[in-house]
Each structure stands twice: as structure tokens, then as C-alpha cells.
Image 1 (cartoon, rainbow, N blue to C red):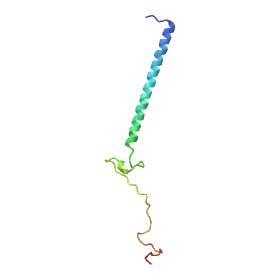
Image 2 (cartoon, one colour):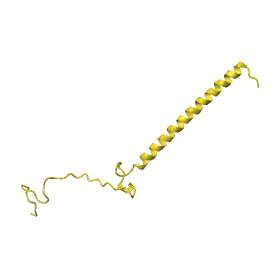
Image 3 (tube, helix red, strand yellow):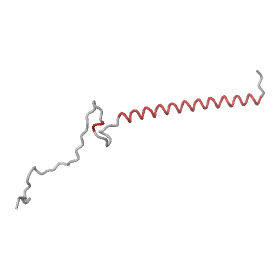
Image 4 (tube, rainbow, N blue to C red):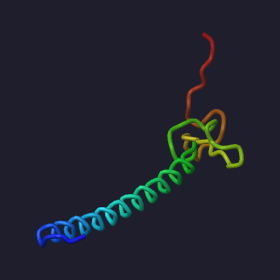
Length: 89
């Protein structure tokens, strides 16, 4: 088949554009794959130890972190020296 010069140039441009689009599609597919892997890792790491969800959502095979917001004190248990005793009147 014989092409005129303008048809040949047009065909070459379209071929180059197709190659460019294929490269862009491959790049997008690689980015999607990378984002999918990152999402899977983030979901797997999401449990009661690193989020504000209950520890019941922590997987069975992972140690549960039970938060304790109470702070320790240097005082002994029970009545404290200098504190008035309360009682019935």
C-alpha cells in the first residue's frame, strides 16, 4: 500500500502517540499497585494499639494494649498525715 507523505507523517505521529500513551498507562498501573500495597499495609497495622478504636478490634494473635491514664503518686495508700479525719456527727 502506498501512502502519501502527509498520511505517512500522520501515521508516524499516531504511532508515537500510542507508544507515549502506553508508557503513561504503565506508569499509572505501577502507581496504583504501589498505592494498593501501601493501603493494605496501613489497614493491617490499624488496631487498638495505634488508633482510638477499642482493643476488641485488635486481632487475636496480637498483644492488646490496655491504656491506663492514671498517674502514679508518691503518697501511700490510706489516710494521709495532716489530713483531718472525717466521721459521722
